Length: 215
Image (cartoon, rainbow, N blue to C red):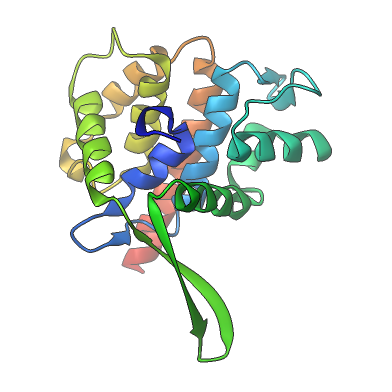
């Protein structure tokens, strides 16, 4: 897996890393953001369609060759029908764990085993290639600040989702504009109606996380 072939959920996860602190920002909402990225990419590839608001697989045998995306596609196929908003949160950590495993195998993360409370084995992850995360973040800032007309569909979707999540690693909150987010959605290709629903859920998760932090 090269930098150019990183999936949308993998790119979004790396965007959430604060390289100055070597930690993920907005950790509470990152599982939903990563899941939203996977849903958006499957929709853009035409493998998930919207049928009366339900996320519906178009082909029971199709695959992407990406284990993260294929894992989610299989989960949707094997589950009872759900609306897009449900899939943004339902078992979202399954997709996050798959992204971490993929990025660790690709050398982007390092897994460090430890024991919680000195008893229970757990795994922490740290950035192995912070320069890659920083380059992706700079690219995302250009997407968020620049014109949208000529953006590739995946870049427009990435920008819309990152803006909805209010990632502190990208722009100060005062510089975020819903108008630009809507323009990014409109330029995300045929799957833009689906992306709009997903972005709404990501924005709601970001708002809930912000309120919880203030409480």
